[in-house]
Image (cartoon, rainbow, N blue to C red):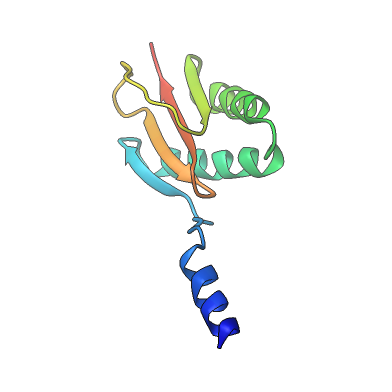
Amino acid sequence: MAEDAIKAESETDKKILHVYPLVKHSDMNEEMRTEAIELCITACEKFAQNYEQAAKLIKETMDKKFGSFWHVVVGEGFGFELSYETKNILYLFFGGNLAIILWKCS
C-alpha cells in the first residue's frame, strides 16, 4: 500500500518535457521555417551544455544560407522585445524549457 502511494506521488511530480520543437511564433515561409527548425534542433542537441556555441552555429549557418544579419538567442528564462525584417522570425521551445529566438534585421 505504501508503494502505491509513493508511485502515485512520483507520477504527479514528473516534469513534462517536449521532445519535439514547439513553435510559438513564426512568419517565415514554409521552406525556410523547416530548415531553421531542423538547424535549431541539431545545434541544441550537439551543444546541449553550451548555448553560446549552439547560437553561434545557428547564426553562421543562417547567414550562409539566407544572407547576413541573422541574430539568435538560445537559453532559458529570458524575455525579449525586438524589431525584425518581416517574414524572418522564429520563436520556439525545444526539450522542455529551452527557448530559441531567431530573427533577421536589415
